[in-house]
Length: 236
Image (cartoon, rainbow, N blue to C red; front, side, top):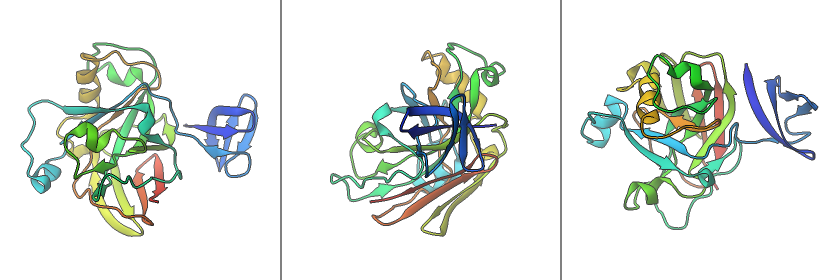
C-alpha cells in the first residue's frame, strides 16, 4: 500500500494513494486539483548514512568505513515531491544523490536487525542535495531544501534488493541495486537505534550509489526505486 499526505483547503490529510488521488477518512482528494502532495512523513530528523556503496567509495576516493557513517538533516531540509529545489547563493557546486529511506512506524530504541522490519512503516525516496564546496557535512548537507522526500511511503516492500536509477533532465546518471550496500537497511536501522530513540515518522536514509553529480537551475532530477516510484524535483 502507498501512504501519502496531501495539502488541502481543509488542511493536511493522509491516506492511501491510488491512481492520482489520496483516499482518506475525510474523503478522496485528487492530486493537482484538490491539493498537492506533501512530504510523506514529518520526521524529527532525517538520519542519513553516507559512504555505503563500494563504487561510491572508489569514485570519491573515500576510505571504507568500519561502521555506518552517518549525519543528520533537520526537518527544515525537507521538500515535497514536485517542490522546486532552490539553488543556494552560498554554493557553486550543488549535487544530487538518490537514496532509499525507511520511515519509522512507532517509537523504538536499541532494536536488533531482526526486529527492524517490525518498527518500519515503509519506504520512500530522498534526494541528498549537497553543497559540495562548503566545509563540513552540516554546512554541505543540512541547509533548507537539501532533503527532497517522497512521493509516498510504500508499506509492502523488502528493501534489500531493489533496482534504482536517477535521471537528470532525461539523462541517466545513476543505476544500481540496494543489494550493493555495504551495510544493509536492517543493520543500519539497528545500529542507529542504539544511539537515538526513533519516533513515528522519523526517516533513515541508506546512502547513495555511485555517480552523484552536479545540478544546475533548470535541471529536473528524477529518482526511481523499484516498488516505490519516482521522486521528481526541478532545480530553480
